[in-house]
Image (cartoon, rainbow, N blue to C red):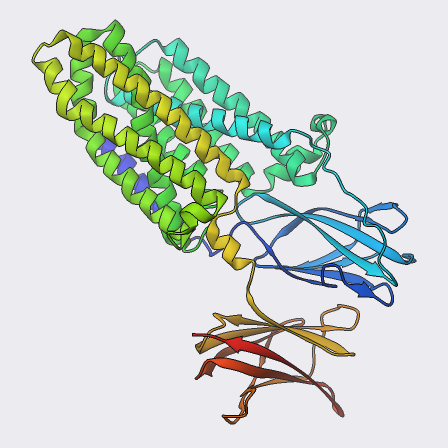
Length: 527
């Protein structure tokens, strides 16, 4: 048993080190700008529409409904990291055009939106409806089932192999694990429908399954499927050492599965967040998976229940400490400020979860401090009350699972803040420039420029210079030169803004050996 523990601990450390080296990602992409602007009225139809997101994305569906109500699918596009340029059909008539898009962000969640603009004069915008009525509630129910069966089922298998082999019949646990496997596989197809915005009948085709498999959700499903399979196969393993190894691997894979996708797992810094999700899942599985077996032992095998309770209680304290620490890290990064607990949908779900967890901790404390000592003293009613307390813990665990599954549809507050970047839009007849400041406040700022021509195509000048000057003329201009980093993208490593106030930002672009274009706009730098 000691060798098995050492081996599993070494594997955990190795996998955590791999997760710590994962690249940075913002997760849950948000649209930060578009050209044309939403609701813009243009004199003539543009060749392209450009969408700028806050992180690199993948495109799953594009559709344009023109002023005549005709739908154009299969639009040609050019995707360069976070910048999506969509080529529009030729011959668009005067009126309002409606462009819908669906992309996938780093956390594996689809993000959809609609951009409307008009040619000549505004008209009536066409209404676009999703083809997947009721899809979100089905996805939520499947997530609840997956979390219960993966965390609870694998945790119960761990309890049987590491704490008490007599904890309940194997057949019941096998049904739980099989239910989780079925829900997991079905969720992959429906996730694909959501990615592509397809109807229910398209579930019989390969397209939704392939689309979901290519995202981080597909990685999660693969790891979770292996975890459930290992836990199920362990139920027929007679050798204790091999049994513990199988269930230990199943628990590790369950943690890795949920650390491979989702809001929290893909948030920066990933060297902290992915291990935090991993440890949070491991600790939750150990706690949640023990509840049903303990309740079964109390009611069916009271003789074995005392030893199982003592062994579980000795380890549970450490797992609960890990659960609280990892959960605190995840909440702090996702919220960014305490007020988000009440001001955002994500925060309100977290607030409800925290209340449920506090109730769980109170029950666990009652069990450890009062009821277990009473059982050891031979008080008959204590066993009944402990059973009721564990049943209440099970109900609270189900409630927590239902709440956590709701996070799939609510971007965390840190992403809501990312929807409003520090950006200046400079527009001229020949060129347009989007200047992104980081952090956009007084002090040292990074600057990234995106330069487009009049048709929204990335443009590379021969040279780019930028100057900053207080609008009131109180200081001399700060001048610097940009460095090209990609087609249409230029960068300045650092510009120091000494005082708060409105500054005039001027971008000078040398478009040929004999022509220079200058664009200016204003930006307010605050402390």
